Image (cartoon, rainbow, N blue to C red; front, side):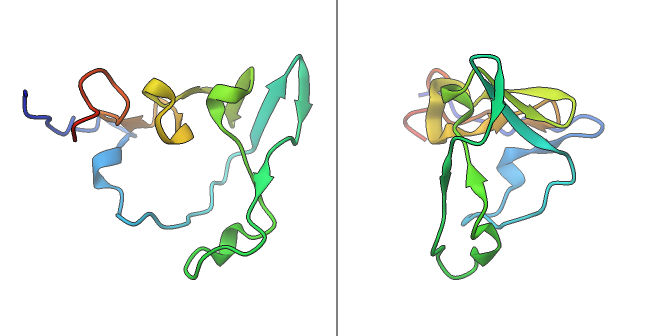
Amino acid sequence: MTPVERVAPGPGQESVWDYPRPPRVEPVPERIWVVVSGVILNVAWSYLSPLPGYEAIRDHLAFYAGLVDEAWVGDERATPQPGRFYGGWVTSRICGPFKGEPGSYGW
């Protein structure tokens, strides 16, 4: 198996490899919205009783980018994480490699 290496972030980017494990909750200043069949909507799941450390997501909605027609962060259309792994949203502000890309299932 070829070793996987972190991609260095470019200007204005951050690497997903630098994200903390376990993840943390951070606010996003941009408007988040999704479109299904041409309609902007709030069809999603929520966390009524989040685990300790994640209380900030209580009463917020969550979406899989790959299960809606469009997922947006501000003025940028997000793409689903490769392979629909974890249901993540990918924008130009982050770089990988990402779990779900071909050859990534062993790491």
